[in-house]
Length: 430
Ligand code: ADP
Ligand code: ZN
Image (cartoon, rainbow, N blue to C red; front, side, top):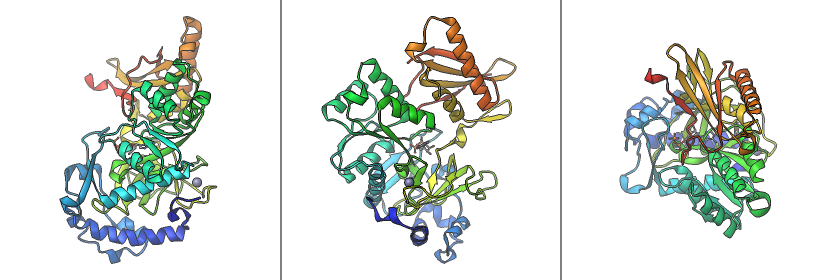
């Protein structure tokens, strides 16, 4: 039933384990250059309950960059066996080092996630995620092997080869980022392959980039599978931090391995239960590079109440976006996911879109370029105009400003190998 005993912990068990591990994390962290001074005023005995974590200083992305490459390391260099560097979606990269123990506990967490959604030894698992420095490659790979799956490190892209591997080895589970999953479904359709009858895939791990419930449903329907949301970040190992269970109602964050807080990014105080704020995380199992109260910049909330599966690890809602992703247009705050939510609910919309912020010399405006599926992209101007108006109205209802909407042919917008780039700000050229 469970991969790890920790899945059966009560709240009391979880907090007991957290407290002991937090105390030893603080002691370990002191061995690093960054925390030696920062933690000089705190001793483990000041930490009597989990709430005392709030007495500890935050760690920001700038701290990590400032201590690049090795200012957070707590053990000698020869004890490390792996190094990942974050993909740098929002700026300079940061380096994360792992000891063998760190890799083992990461693989265990990842295997726990996959087991939770019914993946078992005997499954053939195709990891369609970029390898290399991106943690979604090796991180998920070692989890799948730990679980006992036949694991195919197919990597990202090369769609024809992906399909061939899937057919030849009867792949039953995959890991794929959402933007590629949408593209992949379309590629199958184009080749006349019906995934429901011609392929054996039944389940997917999707994550690494923000996506909406509408996008998930679209992936599930077009591939005939169940798709589970997976959250992680290199600073906290990589994938395997929080993961949906079979109820698909929020992602259980493994609280025996991380302390998670959600704070108001302005006041730095905890938000009220169920409110959206910034996720702050502390590692509890990391040996070589513990990180305390890391401000992730990811905006999210805890889903109140307990999950029908019985696990007491709290659930994170879908990530609303990164604080860095917020667009401000005419004084209105807008997140790309609000736009995706509207677009992906429309059957005519294809797999890609691009948000452009522009200026006509006087005022800022937003242009949303939307790919329309082949069968809807017809020569009938009246129908296309009507669709364009409908998209524009729905977007205005959601974001409160009226964007320009441009319909384009399927596969005409630029697409990236890794995480999708949804927003282009062209205003700075003026
Ligand atoms: P980078 O920050 O360079 O993209 P990472 O690969 O470490 O490097 O990316 C981690 C980030 O990816 C998270 O902080 C979050 O913003 C995003 N992310 C990861 N998983 C999800 C998910 N399931 N939903 C939304 N966003 C996610
Ligand atoms: Zn659950």
